[in-house]
Length: 502
Image (cartoon, rainbow, N blue to C red; front, top):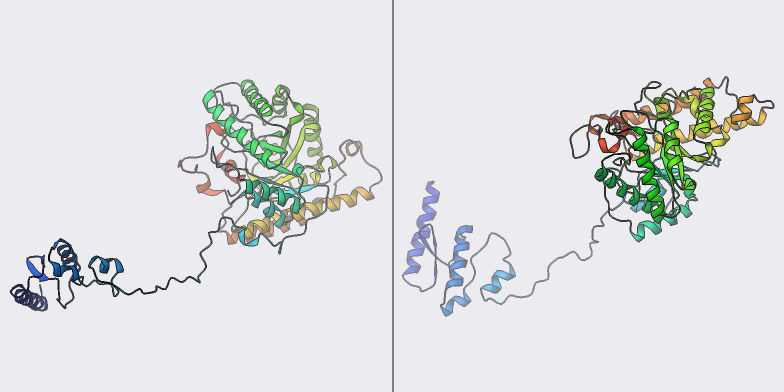
């Protein structure tokens, strides 16, 4: 202890000794030093103050009921401590800032924009209904505005988190607001293609695991019906290497039949797959096998993913390839079952069996989209973009808006060709797709616009696509690659690249 401290200690002891011989007031004992509580006009330590207050409460002397409390470090002793000491205190008004508005908790990213459509892009009037898989973060009702904001004529969404088995039920507000916005922005339920959870595997031979998938499956379908939607798209699943594909196909069909019996009107849409591992649904014959076992065929359909087709070995990279592939699909499955398309370019080679989505025109499928957007059989179907997005929400919107714009310009040019063409080839008569010879330069010029927007978004987003990269290849909360057996062994990057924000 320093000399200054010794001096203070000596002073305290001297004063304590003086009062101890002349007063009967209670004393507080701190480190062996008797410190009187009453009338001691000095600043005490926090430890001494606590001891003094405790000693004061234990006293039975009548005088002690009027004793002042020990000083605290606070510049304004609390009313509670003064009341304990028996001292009547004047009422002091506190500055509680009653005029300050309470902080408003932001629950959705569109809370502040619900009443305005400022900045929304104008939607193109077209028989081809193009739009992306949009976020439903903050509530499914937000998906409608997210689609309208970028000029989409169709959209997809998750009706609950795609990475969780269970979720809170939809509220009355979620349902009523979703329906009101569908009407407000003029969307038809026929152009909304809900996507099912990636966790499900209805083809799993393990009864317990398959039942868990079915419960998730049914819950999502019931949510769709609550929202007044008509189409629910899902990945059929996997054999997990423990049974035959024929057995898994039968299990998937059984789950569809159960869901049909438990619901009213919704159409269950089976998506074709890329063919990785033990996944079922990459061949048209496998899709047909499921449909053959479905009892109510009016409520089952197919969604064709362009990236998956190419990865599975169907060469749709040219107009002729597209026409031949759709002809084969019609022969095996039937165009009457086609309920939608996923428009994605590919990052991989033909027949790779790898699900790697690329932005429109930046892979080998530029002419595919030209064929789709001039094929009258694809009219009035939801044509959903599941292409990578980058950076902020604004950057993501910019990429999708550019892709939508380019696709509609392809459709417009195709309409012009159709109007001016007098003679058609037999293939054109059968398919409705007009000859596109000489279109390569035009398509390349259009897709360069997408490339420029994507490059700018990549730069702002640090080159990282949402859903891509090392972080995306880790299963959330599990720290391992997403080769989830129960989800059908979808490869990691494919799982994440088609996964929008929740």
